[in-house]
Length: 631
Image (cartoon, rainbow, N blue to C red; front, top):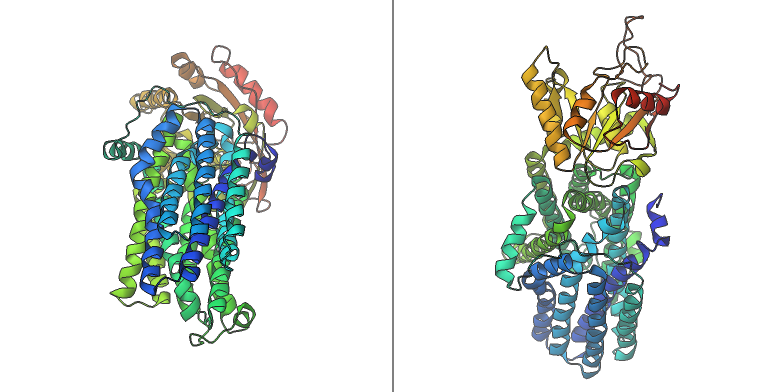
């Protein structure tokens, strides 16, 4: 298995697919920008005709997402994915040959048809792009894999834009033609090495009607609230990113001071480059910050950062008049230039924190037999939000007469409001953010055996020693799958914290003498969660340790396994006793205080036991052995 995201680049499970999708995004942008350069510079069209073509171009590229996403999602579920990928790459080679002829003939209308066909290419590839990752990667690799995909895509878009313009700037169609055909051929070659990805729902019937097939797919996205709100969050990011980058050409001229066409282009590329590099860095950092889990606590952090630096972009100005800067070096020496670039970079960085965990959540929470269709529904909404962003940009300038910095301020504030709305609907995001901040500040969590012994999918019962009030947070930070914790009802009802436990879907339990009905309801809830294929964690000691030692395990685990035959994974927490929030030492009569911040804590997993052999006594012995002498 891969121990960090970069080692995935040497794995056949990931590398050929990563290269294939990277080259596809790269070629899209080489072709699009070469086409726009040809139309606007070398065809001798009037400004009005140039405007018509340049405005039609993005519309034609996005149109297939509305009409064909639903069908693409169904095809990706029904058939083996690598066969579809290779067919799509062959289609790309043929389309790029047509594009080359369009370059030579200076046939603008044909090039726009090719642009539509490349949009169709991206539409069919899109559902596979994200649904194939959970089939190829383990849960703890999803965040890193998505980070690589997002960072690679961001850089491919930037480099493709630069190369497309550079290849066509002279008007000679040969370099651009050779490039787009060559990139397509390399992409097809890479696709031949992608391992097979079996169909996840071979029995479904494909509905080719875009209307009747799209609505059920949108409803599929709405089945789980967390998934649906993640899809909305992803679509909102596309709105924000499209709105921001669409204003950069004018921003480079009016606010960054470009004096000539070359200076404007250089400043535009600088602004886009800084934003794209920031997005790539943020995407790659997600794995490190999340401790290789699907950490949705990064989403509120990302939203907060995007809003803060987006607002600061409004105030970050160098005060020079339009047309007063001759190039990048002159711009860099103007007052306020570094602040502008820093804000653009940080918007990208926090955008990566925002986007990558949302994709990972959709992938991890959606059943594999539905994931391609959910991604297709996400793509339909993305397209709708992208079009809305374009309309919003036009209205803001033509009707409301906002300046570009005012526009940046408005979309940054809107981003904050949208984030608050989404997090109020799904408190789990905010809960995970607060837990992530606390765990990162107070503990240095390491794990052993988790990737090997905690199952990637399907139900399992986790049993662990109980040392502190933070045990559930520590385990959640070390295990990539969501966990349902069984919790003593008095803790569950703690004033001010009850909403956190509810958001985490913890299961309250009471002793038989305290509330027999609640105890029975808890066991019913545990059985239902296991029946749904979830992970459930219990602390069989029944209470926090009073002296750091493991107390005898109670028989609740056997009662659970008598109803549901699931594997049992023994876990041990090491190093928690001397950390904050462990139980009062009754001999000393005072609360144990932490000896240091960032206490070193380890989560150790042992080999799963079958339900038939997993007695309370045996599990206690296993946990004791895993923990050893380090309380």
